[in-house]
Length: 355
Image (cartoon, one colour):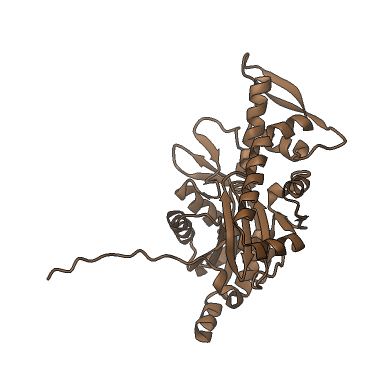
């Protein structure tokens, strides 16, 4: 066993960790820390197939491109929606952070949703390998997030973490380095944006873009009534006349718009607790629920979860970086975390023996 771990440690001497998110991709290089944080967006020339921009530059083009140029997110619900674009995006990001060293073909650890299928795992591995990586391993996002915030996941104690990203909400109870209970809900930040855009379209007959919806969520988004109501002006296109139109929307309206996706998350949390062994639930009541991911920044979401579950909810200091920091800690100490990595199932081939 020691021989295997020593071999694994040497293999991961030159490695990077990737949080390949629906909304944002973060990259951590061993012993250097987080070196890249970019939107998971790619702009492509539809006539030539050439990638024009990746990351922040491409995100600025969302909803603003002329004919023949398209900016899009190649990740959907935490998994790959466009294999070729993810490959191009990964190559672009790795090239930036590794500079002239990309020809060394880095080893890569990628954080993925806990509910990922075998086919989706293969797509992630193939994309990373085609982008220049060699030796691709996977870790579930809730495990990485738990490691990132320093939870004692290797102990026989219940640790509950809720990681709300752009494409998925990962709800997990972790003990003895494994997932005892986990729900990977494909309702998260993107669905919140869509809910806001849909609310404005139905109530005001005004169409807004996804970036505008995201800004409304950031500025006015809330899950629990507050004493002070806020409002903001929103510009969009009148669906009746086609002309530009400005409306004013309040935090109360945004809370109403977000009711459906938030309720789905709350129900999934309750379901996860129902499936968790009583001894671990007792630990969770004592230790609290840890809330991570960009979605945890939604105002008063922690208060709502606490009211619905009667369990203390703790926000962490670096919710956007927990997953990649945890994945980075794993590659920095790979021999200590070998048992938390996702296992790769080998396909069984039945052979017919002719007698």
